[in-house]
Amino acid sequence: MITVDPKCSELYPGLCIGFLALNGTSSAGENGDRALDLRRAELEAELRRRLSGIDKATLATLPPFPAYSAYYKRFKKTYHVLLQLESVALKGRSLASPGALVQAMFMAELENRLLTAGHDLDSIAGPIVVRAATGREEFITLDGHERRLKPLDLHMADDHGVISSIIYGPDSRTRIHPGTGRVLYTVYGVPGIEPAEVDLHLQRLEEYATLAAPNAAVEERRVLTTS
Image 1 (spheres, rainbow, N blue to C red):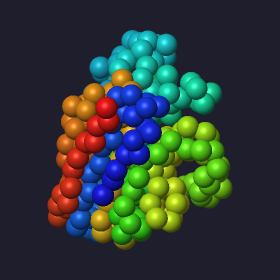
Image 2: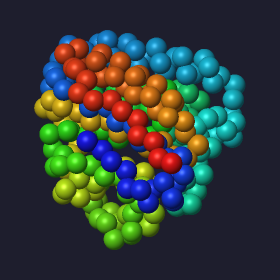
Image 3: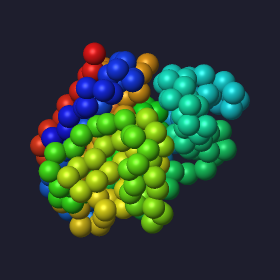
């Protein structure tokens, strides 16, 4: 389903990529909203208790933030999950999402701090390849803007083009929508992130997604490593 271009291991030694494919998710939100919302509230309260009293600077030192910050720094960007955790844990705001399958992803992302993207699997054309950008690739982001990838930014592409990049996030073409019956979650484990961390994250993703869609079943779950 997903392969990694060998050049990525030269540019980003230790890179690992995780993915989780689920089917039977078209009922997401019909019966699972309450269970997922209760778990979201528990998670938010847990994060606030655990991180109570620490400041923004200290938050940024918690793993795996330094690994992601090192990646984002080369592109003069800030890791958005750090900002989201600051908003929920330190400022008391609630996690917002456009739907149950996306909420499940945001919850796992916030809990484990690993960069994750979600896609409608039936909208993906052919196999997916992880590559480092040349700087010529373009795609339409979730917000409807056309973006040209920054050189060397890691991204995923199918036969029709880019479906996500680390810096710009997921695309509009394969976005999760209310009728999504098969969902694909992908995880960018930048250098410094251990494969075991990604695997645990995928397990949590599965747990939250099946809260949202109790009839969901795993098609495939894997962690790809590079050497």
